[in-house]
Amino acid sequence: MSTYDLILSGGRVMDPSQDLDTVADVAFSGGKVAAIGPDLPRDGADVRDVSGKLVTPGLIDLHTHVYWGGTSIGVDPTDYAKRCGTTTMIDAGTAGAGNFAGFRKHVIEPCDARILAYLNVSFAGIFAFSDTVMVGESEDVRMLHPRACLHVANLNKDLLVGLKVRVGARASGSMGYQPLDIAIEVAEEAELPVMCHLDWPPPSRRDVVSRLRPGDVLTHCFRPFPAAPARGDGRVREEILEARERGVIFDIGHGMGSFGFDTAAAMLDAGFLPDAISSDVHSLSIHGPAYDQLVTLSKFLLLGMELKDIIAASTTGPARAIRRPDLGTLAPGSIGDATIMDLVDSRVEFKDSLGVTKTGNKSLGLSGVVIGGKWWHEA
Image 1 (tube, rainbow, N blue to C red):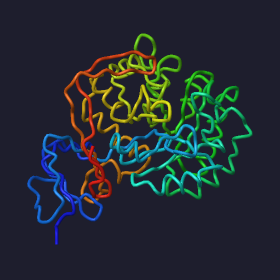
Image 2 (image 1 turned 90 degrees about the horizontal axis):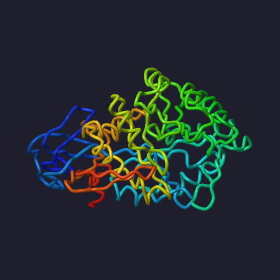
Image 3 (image 1 turned 45 degrees about the vertical axis):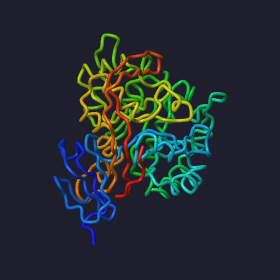
Image 4 (image 1 turned 135 degrees about the horizontal axis):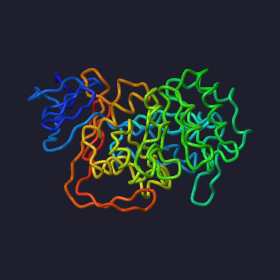
């Protein structure tokens, strides 16, 4: 009988949860990580030679939209996971109380890769998001039913990581920050955090950020003006610094319109690293400028962020945001997910949400995926 089911042999193992960056084997058994070390015994295991490649905990994309077929914004989660190696996708409020049951039954449960979700405070979720029709789901108070939201949240605690609310001129219109207040009230009752989207004001950045509690997530945190977290002179705004001090989590959420190179450079120069780097992949952003998680991570290589910090922002950072310490780690006994990547040396062009183009010389490319201790996909 084999000691291990699967061994990834000879890769560069980078696991920020263990402060680990070394060449080693990673072994899996019974769906869990079994051991990390040199020259682990092979005896009958499925051995995959990953020498020269980067082996990390399974990547977590904290902001996706994967209610495929049920909403216009959703993309196919299996195709997406095979495209960029995300073993855990967090759906950022695509479904609300009115349609979460369908999302669960028809998309989440059949998917091999893990899908967890924020429940949208709007009853219909993000119901009208496309290149032809765009209606903010938080614009109409009739869509915001706290009791219905709480009821569905309590029924789906095994899959839910929090509540999602979108505010701003485009998402909540004249409702301003009121949908956020409703979401926080429901979240307090359900004992869950909130992820908040802010687009163009109103409401103001200060009005939104000042409401967020420890453990709540501000997504689109490096967005360009307006509502940028840094002033034009590069200084980080006081309300942003105060929010981090009290434990608010900052997530990139690239998407179509929510990431600017100039903002990101200013924030990194100020020493303000994101807690999570996520794609905000959806039916529009998957065709650019976000594309996927690996492209989004690669933009931070271009910006000079250390590789270990980039990997942390796609493993331990999002795992902390969703309160799942069993994810985003290769510690023995943890869930047996891993992403195998190539660090590619070649000229590559990236665009931000304003169309600004920058040229880099490194990018991350997918080589393979392990889910539940088994080799799942080879790129």
